[in-house]
Image 1 (cartoon, rainbow, N blue to C red):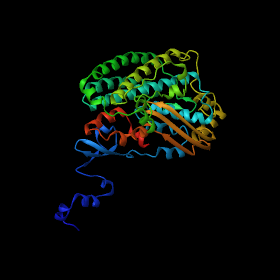
Image 2: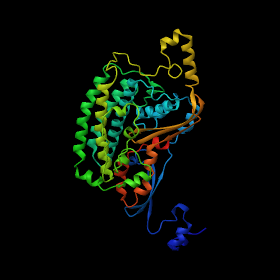
Image 3: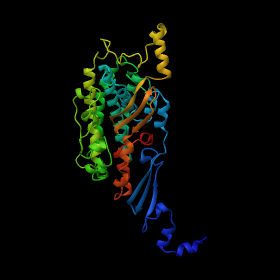
Image 4: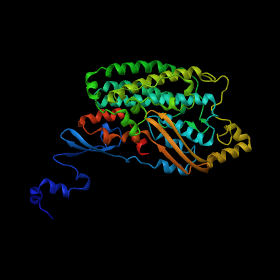
Length: 423
């Protein structure tokens, strides 16, 4: 074994030859730095192995998987409705949107996606847009706090609490909602909910404007984000980026417009895009997306069949006792309904054999579910297309050439969630 003196007098090439394999391509006086997995700016348990030449990043290697829970494997032993609570834990900043995306995939497999009652579709759209505003508020507040603007974080979280109050009133839970069901939603809108939502929309527009006034022309924020983390349109497409990160690079692609689902084709809204593709553009895209979500929500509240109180008793689930659970009254008074409930709870709805893929426009990008069914109430195979996983794939291409301090606004502008990335 070599002594300390022997190692010290070896030339750099000899020392590099004895180094671990992953370090042998390092030449000169470079340093390896572990950022994460417990660093607050990584927005979750993400570890980035950075190679530094002074303050300049020369190589970046993401290390993911710390939150892996095997959701896709678990789905194979769950009925379709039993897996809905697991979707809450994907992008846990927008659980309602995850619920809807998964339910739409199962309904596409069963061939009932076009049979959903209109009121159910409007409720689902409102759930998705509330989730989008909530997720963007947190992403905006966290990014601003990371670069020193604590006031914006407090502003955005104030409105986010109001959204949680609305979600709690609607679903019974603030965080893990499990609200959607295959074939509909768990329950109708509660009394006075529409009025509370209209009040929130009035307040959140003011909050968005105030937050933007604090950041958009703030010299410190602009200097930390403009011309930092530039992603070209071609690179964004090549690396499979979706959502605001793709649109920030100038690509006008939104699944709500490109492949409309639910009632999005009946609503008017715009798809904001950037022109440069830097951190500042991605910030601006999310600001405008929140305003567009407010516009969508107002249209839904005006157009929803049955109105605020559902005076015409519009259904919120399909009329198929072999897919949706019967009412409690029918279960207690009808043997057939009791049998249907027993089979649905124990075996799940009987889906046909086949393969489907459905992608929805979630706050982080395209959340997709691929389902391979051999028939019965559980999937043979389920694959989740997590937008955060794809969005993080660009880090080895994006980070080199930037300073170490630039990683903070870059991570904030990508706005990823590791629970969804690791699944």
